[in-house]
Image (tube, rainbow, N blue to C red; front, top):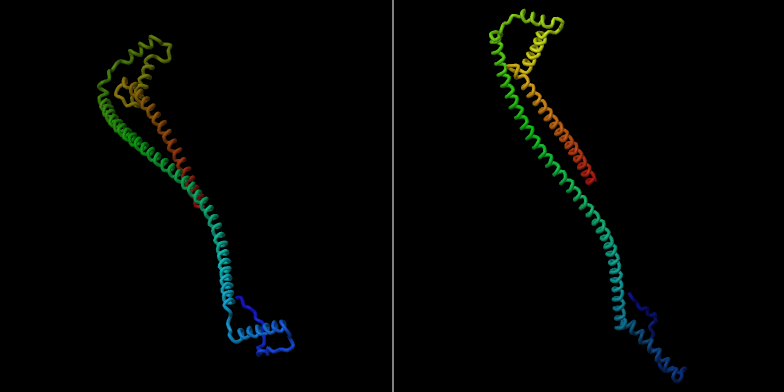
Length: 270
């Protein structure tokens, strides 16, 4: 606050104007100076307060001081807000980068999930196809087994019937005459036709017993049928083995994809 310093002057009484030691204009000037000082002292000590000009000066000084204070406060606020704005810009750049990274991660995880979903759908479709084929094959095998069982029952019935009626179907011949005939034809041979025929008959009996047929004429068709069934079963076994290998490969691939998804989820969480 602006305060005007006033020299302290001891109050004095009016001096007499009739000074005889001064002459002319110098005496008049001195008298005016003394009267001015006396009037000034009266204004200060008797009237009191400040002059209108001093009051205006003081008001202007206060206004200027308040304006300077407001200006300094405004500058400080401006600097503070500028720093805040710089920090917000840095945060905005950082969060923009983080948001872009999150978007890329979200897209990658979405593609991975879509791939896993498609793979799971394909695996389910493949599994349904294999189940359908296996059920169909199971029905065919069951039907074949029933047909085989029915055939075996018929064959056993025929064998039992032939066994019961076999003695009545045998023609008895005199073996001595046949042996004499063979001995006369080729006496030096170790294996006569009789024994070769007996060996062939024994082989045919074994084949008939093994193939479960009613006559020797049905042995060859039965063997051909068994060969065909064996080839068909071997082909089916090969196909089933290939399907099993494919299923194992799909299972390994699915396990690998599951591990990949787990790793991606852990990295994203980290």
